[in-house]
Length: 202
Image (spheres, rainbow, N blue to C red):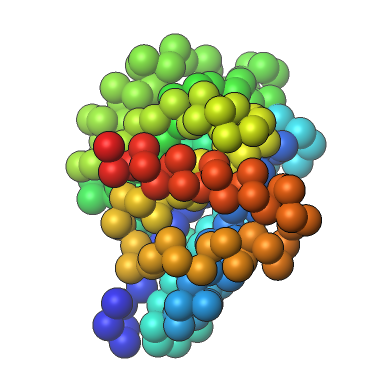
């Protein structure tokens, strides 16, 4: 990134999927690699199952406001496919890259009828139509192989780093995790992170 360049990342999903934790870890990793990082969150229905989107803004220059404006998202990481599509329509454009977990977790706003339900194949088709670059992976399967569904956020964070869309390296993530979790959880999360990197590069 140049002095004036910035990268705007959205990590979106539903409550309980851990995207807020993933955003925090991304911010810490970026700061360790010399970038300024600002993290902000927006909540829909804030209970488990409600929509949650974390805004992560990285720059090598001035500190940025915490929230991404319409059309300014460079990368969207979707822990839940419908939420990824919603954020692409709200804050992205054709140039926005999308990394999405193919396994749906029905958000509360769909269960309550506030948002129409869509089959996952239709969601993924719409993402491909609206974005110039979409990476689809079965993040939930990889998370379960790494030790549990709760590591989905680390799988998707690994896929983001592995994609090369950000000027960040995976080196240092083990130290970041060691500072946030106990030894066993840090090791499991690192396994998930590395699985996501491998999936993005496959």
